[in-house]
Length: 241
Image (cartoon, rainbow, N blue to C red):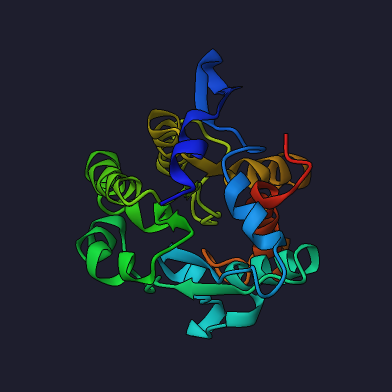
């Protein structure tokens, strides 16, 4: 796909915790071709497919298994992008399944995700990967990333939203380690990275917890979804750093 080569070669090194350097895609240039398409007017414009693959959070689940589709981050991203790109035709396609973890998502990736011909792909599985562990989840994430990049699809990896049973400020906490692994994968494959987990950590440090952002023990409310959407929309901003 036409977006891949330009996005892949433009990278930006970012400082990470533990004094390590991480090289992820350049937020300003990675989606340059997509942003140019979003600015086109009819009849020169084309439909842009944004595909969100993952578990219950991108699927829209809140408290009591209620699905708040329009208040969850895929559609909040759509609303924010339409405010910036009023002439764009944007399809938000959610291939996420509640309760699913990356290994399951990987087994249906070729059949359920690639046929949608994503112009940008978002992957969000870390919350449910706690059950399978770092090693197995890394293999599944890597295979999905590789399959997407082979098709020239720009990929943005998402660090998790919180689980209130997890101490997200403890460096040894499994969820913290999964977030770190996602950053490492973004660096290794030079994909995009949306890091809401870091923002939720900042909130936990300042406010003592993240309850104001949660509808359920491990499902964000609209405020939490707005935070996630904000981290994604940065990749589409003309002023991205």
